[in-house]
Image 1 (spheres, rainbow, N blue to C red):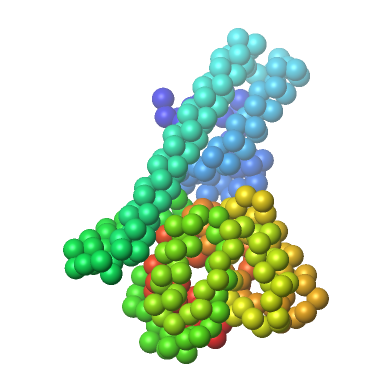
Image 2 (cartoon, one colour):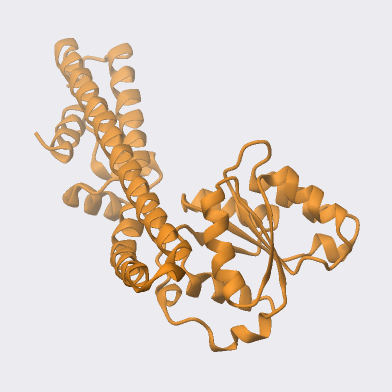
Length: 293
């Protein structure tokens, strides 16, 4: 039996209309009808539905009034159906988590392949040819990966590099990332476009570098989010609290392979100026930097 059919049966046996169920879930009835028809309820909506139905069953079990309510046996059957739905929900959640992890792993592998090719492209035309092929594969896969991970897709990010990037020549960038390969890939891109690049392996090193250099020394900070010792959120928060305004107001661009809405909101809350999803190609990176020239 499909999930929607099971929910319909439970509602019918309890004498609860789907309109009432939607009201208790905090949804519009039309929205619930549509989601049930399309089997498109989110995990959170599904869990809320189970909670509402579970409370209704528990109420009937405790306060039977004998006026047409289901029997004890029927209520126990309904509880078994709720258990079945909860098992189905948990199975679906684990399946999606596995698929999301697989997509992230695929993105990481593609990013690494492109990175190694970029680092070695000066060693011959074969490497250059390999890099071009890998970039095509990555570009074609990025939409699929982003869609599977529920990320917003920025079509402009895959466009040509900005024409006015020459205006950034000589600007100093602090790359903050615990992954050496990621730092090397971004450094290669930036140096090729005339930037001066310095590196930090975690958030604590980034804060120390900002304090050690004179105000205005760094023009941009590329800040990874997930790092040991100190993550990008805490590092950004501390930089924003520095007493010197030139240090505190340096443009900070978040870098992450996990672009869930919560991460974007947290980045904005701590004062990050932009948000880039790894793997980061040169066009996307330069378009972000050019915003703050």
